[in-house]
Length: 291
Image 1: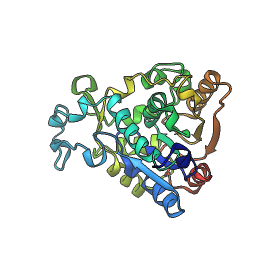
Image 2 (image 1 turned 90 degrees about the vertical axis):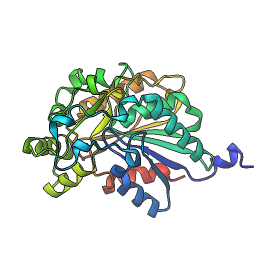
Image 3 (image 1 turned 180 degrees about the horizontal axis):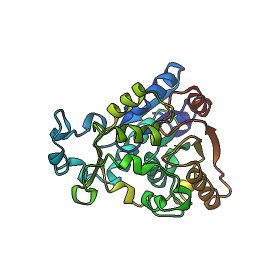
């Protein structure tokens, strides 16, 4: 039988949680590069994403925009508890083989914090990559109204929204819109200096539906659980969705909550979506995985 002590001597496993309207595909390049370097890595598809993704019939070509605004989605029933339960299961399985480092991108930070509250003893470190790390305010949505978020270009992305989240239960974005403003808005907010081809590939990786309840869910890291876990925050300094000022606020709040466990801060000159296999990000994760 493998003991906890034996497992602690094994190499760590990196478990990565994707952001909103996305899937594990977003970090596939990072996972591939780290794996080829000999590291243990797994990218999680949250419930309703990846192989479980839902694509409304009205989203397909030819699109029916009127139907797209009302077609029901199974993701409307998914909650943060579903996300946490799924990731905790992955963490438990990975922990049987050695220490676990849990990382989240963007909205994935909400799940990371909640998992940290639930199973702090199973995690060697939590990592946020330009991710929401709620401490003082209760949820993701609360931070959207802060001064530090004032420069966010999120409205240029939500311009692609085609339904009322309160009515449909999901945030439904039409990434296949023919409106050039949507294409440019995604580039400006998420992709920085990506070429047209790279923005097109990004749009085709994104999924139309995301549970509307996640941004409203309680997401604060708790000092006596999450606050005991060593943490790293990777600032993306060219991010126009979660501005650097808001990223810095997350770091400052976390450090104020747990002054004896300060955040390990790294900075990379990259936009919100990386790409995450860029050498600087690969080196950060490779360094965290070396033991």
